[in-house]
Length: 370
Image (tube, rainbow, N blue to C red; front, top):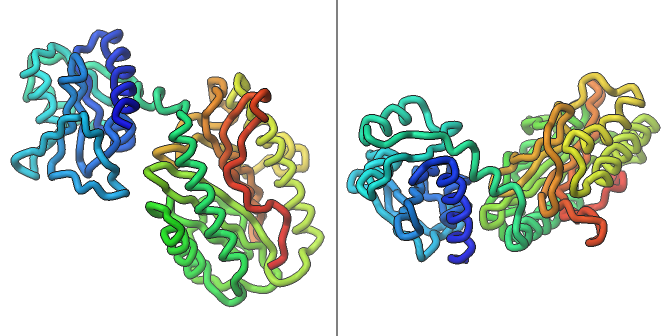
């Protein structure tokens, strides 16, 4: 995809030029990978006045591993002579040598110490803020990116489906989480998209629960949240089940409520809809049933090269959805001491003319008794 990476760099170069900067320095790893095809550990990307001045600066030679990515072959790679050197400082020196008089940097990512080091090595360079320019470019995905997310979702669905076919009673949350992560890799994932969460009984329904040594028991709710990474792109899926017996009435009622909230959020995903309206659609269902207190701060978020990207689907979120933006919709309710339900899908925003939102994670949302 050399032409894709080159086009992305040109779009960022235009933004930097409009902002009055002759060159740009990208240091956030996900942003480096988006523009260069790879993000070796500690690497930064310098965008010169034109494509010929673009350089990927690395403290060590790129490894070319799947996790790191493979750099655009058209991009010049410069390995620092001393591994302990700072590629960002070296990039500022290169920019000055290329004749740049200004350099746009990712102030939201640079430390104060690193910013000072840049100013000291090239005092004639005027430092400006890139203003999250790369994140804005990353928001809308192309079809190649969506294809990677689709494969990641298929892998996560496979891993979860296989777990549901195994014996669960008596096994610990931690053991199940480790098994899920192994299955992700077995099915072709680069690795898990984030630490897998398995929550049973009173732990179920908690967002971000860290698996413990609690064992699965008959009658438990079992909440699972996992994701796969494929070629750097990350997806997310969350499901809740009942273990070993028919669900109790309160479990059915709670599950049906969260399912209705999640469906309302999914159905609101259309280009032009405000981010907060998606949150409001799901939150209203739970709030009307008396579960307004203690709900998660947001209903969903964007995914891509990072598992938590813009947009944020939250009550105060600004902005509107665009087509080809992948997001999660993940409402949940946790009842202290009893447990709860979380249902989480990754979808791509599509116009109604194209069939509406594309569901990437397809594991059943029926309340199964395992």
